[in-house]
Image (cartoon, rainbow over the protein chains, first blue to last red):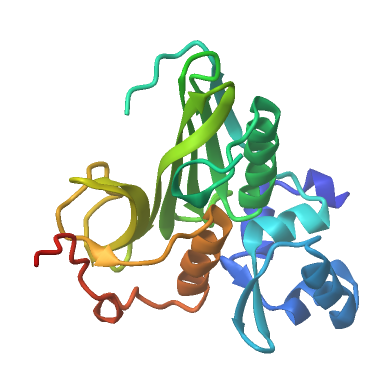
Length: 85
Length: 165
């Protein structure tokens, strides 16, 4: 089965945590640690820096990197709405 | 042109670019809802509401980033922002705001307190803070989330608004 067809139950089993280390993501994506760190430094994958050498990557970013089905943002655009503030 | 609070005024195209760029940036962190209201009028709001981690896992944190713009000479000046973080498990709220307080214009400040929900109204307990861009606030909030830490409200000094004498 292609990764993109992974159903949500399998997604929960594959990615049960909210954050992943670069080495965990490297293993999931069959890439090297340095490639994942390069992605972080280039801004190609979202990450938060906890200390000088410690990063955490959010689950949704891992889902996108793996090419799994990702929920699209809900966008509401109402240009004619009167805004009060 | 520089608008209120030291921010550059944005053209309508720049506002759209900001909205779309931030949507893509924030979408990597959870379930995102974006609203862009009032673009044809003189007052406009951008709001990004995020629940993390999203995609079928129970929600741990909610953030809501709201920016409010007023049209001046065709371009959009930011007049206030509310960047809100709510840690559901700990019942803690941390927020960075920029808006008028009493006679003072565009005062950056924070709120940090126990809470049962994302705040929807301004409260009176203002704390000292510097002006932040949305991405800076988001990195701070996500660092708390990823390190499983509560906001340290004791690190903020109270904001003294009145100066007498």
